[in-house]
Every structure is written in structure tokens, then in C-alpha cells.
Image 1 (cartoon, rainbow, N blue to C red):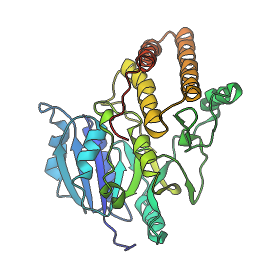
Image 2: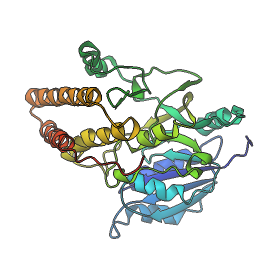
Image 3: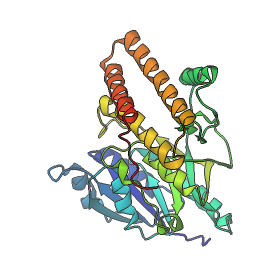
Length: 321
């Protein structure tokens, strides 16, 4: 791989001008500079805050900044950016992610050594989201109850339909194989998207798991890796996020859609394992509401119940395979 390989960064955004400014700062501090940033703003026509802060400084960076307005949700926005990317590598970097200065340098070095071009994508390591002991409690219960067939971070449970959170993996050096990747700080070969792969239209509007679905489909042909030396910091900005009822609904329906799309047609045992897991999640969130009496728990509980009923009625239809 040429050491001057061009990287196109694709970033969807919605009503987060300060996060975008932070992203621009982190990109210009890279040891290995990207070729371009394709910023896709999903805000309505009367929402111009991000445009107002970006356009005046668009020529102040050591890489090309291209600003577009296109709505439809993060999956649709990323597809829009993919279609306009001119680099040999396409990096999906969220606006609330801050890359370490050697992030792209570490990513490119792995691609450079892949002479057979077997690696389709590489994701970084979020240094601030590694699960602490308290955050692992529910996973301990998953194991005790046998809800999942695997607990290896970054793998996909093909028997239950659940991706095992990569944040459980402790810090490491080098690379390791994964089944799926998030879009927060991930780089793909252009060949992956040139093959026709795009984010599924099912994930229009508010996306959830669209990045894992994209990666699982890419993984059918290419190797996917996580690079522990390519670190990033995710701020998890609250701006532009949806209400808890919608999140709860998507946390069931989107997961079921991915399961059907990647593994289906599902047999009785697979469906049983999926709904058993989701019923445990209902109980867990209900316990949170009883204990803390916070409306967010009740809203998510209602959303998840509606999602389960929606799936049970057979309303989840595949849009693409």
C-alpha cells in the first residue's frame, strides 16, 4: 500500500456545531493527515448552526473539507458521503469522537502490510469506554442464566442475535479479529464500498446497529480487525439524540432485523433465544424503574415492550440481504 494512501473521512452530524469543531481540531492534529472530510449535516433547512461555524473556516485546514446538507438519519448520511468519497480508504468518524494523533498512522500501517488485501476494515479502540466492574454486572447475569452462547467482545452471537460489546475488552496492543465494528472510529477499504455495499435503508431515520449490520455483511468477504494501538476518545454527546421510547423500540426491532438479515431464516430455537434475551432486558429495565423511579426507565420499558410486540406480530421485513 502506498504510504500516501488517501483517506476520506465521512461524518454525519445533527445539531452539534461544537462537536464538529472539535472533530476538525482532532483531524488536523493527525500525524497522518486525511485527504478530505465529508461532513453531512442532517439538520432541517432552518437549522444553520453547524453550517455557520464550518463554512467560514472551511479553507483553514491541511485537508479538504466538504460540507453537505442531507437528512434521513446517520445510515443515509453515511451512504451519501460514501458516494462522494475520493480516497482509497473511507473512515467513519463520529462528530463526538476525538482521535489520538497516531490513529490513522496505526490504521494505515496495518493496511500497508496486508499485501493480499484480505482486510476489509479496521476499527480503533475507545480508551474511555472500557467497562468497569460495576458495568459488567449485567453480563455476569447473562452468563449465569446462559442467555448468550458467546461472551467474547467483538463477536456476534449467531445463535441469539446479539453483538458482544467491544468495550468489555481490556486495553491491548496489536490487532485482533472481530465480527463487527461500530462506525465511531472505523476505516474501510474503498473496495468494500466499490463492491456495492451500503448501509441498509431499513436504518433510515434514527439509526441503531446499522454499523454492525454493515460490518457483518462486509465480514462475509473480508477480514475485520480491531487495532488496540489506534485509540480514540468518545465523548458520547447528548445533542441530537432521540427519546428513550424510540431508543427502546429500536433496541428490539433493529436487533431482530439484523438477526434475520445475517442469520435468517430463523428457526424456532433461534427465535426462542432472541425473545428470551429480550424478556430479560425488559425485567432489567423494569427493576431500574422500580428502584430509581426515573422516567427514562419507564419510557425505555414502554419502547421495548412495543418493539417486542411489533416483532412478535411479524412486522419486521428485510429490505436487503
